Picture (tube, one colour):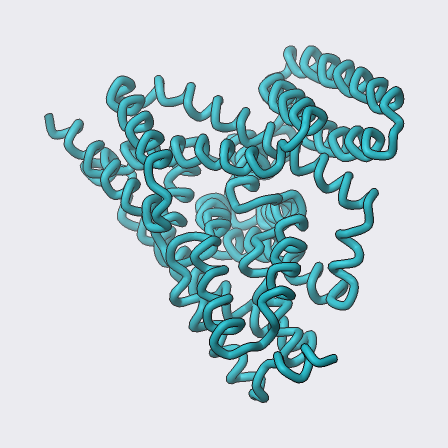
Length: 401
């Protein structure tokens, strides 16, 4: 009770609350770590909306849940200030600047054929650096998630299954159930489920060989009519994104590139742009949605991605900490997170192998290697956009030589 008296948001109108978080969205440079630090500095340390200890607990909860944690924190703090409508306004304020900028960037990309000529050469260099970013993200997220032998087993098995073409709806539920069984002492049942899951993956692999185009069966051609499937793809990514926006890459790539709607180059260009703009990194989904379905596609996929981030806080506001702390739920979430790490690693391997198909394979491999080394040598929050710009210049230099 004393904490409620000492720490509480100031009285403000709904428009003022929206503008407060809109400012955070406009200044959202440097990725989620920088965005969370900005919110903490202003709302916790300076304005004392909540205590530092409670903010830390909330952050731990948001990191355990799927979705962009910086956005989820803003929704939660908006509810704390003005109820659920306040949470909706806070979340919209935080995400709208990045959404608008990404729409503008996607429009310019396709309106002016930025992927051609010298600009295209620069983007090829940036794509190599994006592969390095994904590799580094897989390692960084894995270091936090794969903390024991069981989780390592799930992560490695999930990565191998993904490389064999197994769909996420086999991999992720298996990871959740296996880890929950292990944590409750039922190791025999967990081992049996692991074997059954492996058999399912092998059967899936061989069943897919005669029909390599099955992924596109029943899918509408790219265009504005594809927005319902784009919404579902975004919703899938929003529900299964653990530990940062990079964990959404395997799901969106499987849906969009796997259907033949996008090439890996265009998909990676969207990831590159999202690393440069002041926006949540997950906004690369908006770029992909625009590429496939124009403005309706961009709106649909973005709505799908952010819907869970709004829903978790707005529906479970009073019970979030208790729900995530429940041992069986936490164990299942940890298992899903470990499997997602495997998916990211498999995606990174696939994309890295794809560098050999670039116009200048040796140069692309060298750019990716240099970018990866730089990412390990520096922890500066502005390293990703700077490296992407340098990689773009390197790609341009290779084309001019």
